[in-house]
Amino acid sequence: MNAVLPAIPTSSSAAKADLGGLVQAVSQSVAEDGLLNPFTPEQWELLAGYLLPMQVDAGHTLFTQGVQDRTLYFIESGSCSVHYEDEKGRLRLAIVGAGSVVGEGAFFSHRPRSATVQAGAPSRLWTLTALRFSELSNRQPAVALALAMAAGSVLARRLGNRRRRVAAT
Image (cartoon, rainbow, N blue to C red):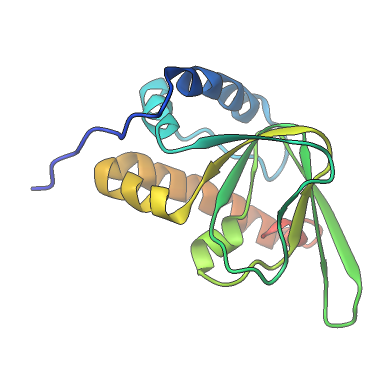
């Protein structure tokens, strides 16, 4: 029988209080590729111990096409611009707003980033690295599974929609 270990505490209790903005953004999102809220308030609190906040200015590059990185980004406020060049050198573009995620493609595939993502506006994000997700999976498997299913749902909806397919990063 696997025992559920407690979450690793964050360096500051203020970080957990700040997660309320993300919870609200996810709950209020009406975007087709928005993150569906898979968590109870208690699970959000557990997840908060694994996420790191990030405030970025418009134009800040979160990641670049071709880079090997599996960080998942949750968008609390602002927006992210997704673009890449295909084999014919054409630029594709999608805008991902508050209440959704970017980086889910590489998060699941373990492959290089398929697109470049920049903040389209001043944005507040929450990051989850692959290492922190592994820790979450070991300590809070139900929360990790719910997160994986929610991010997988975003990926599936993006891939199923020809216009939004580019947003699968």
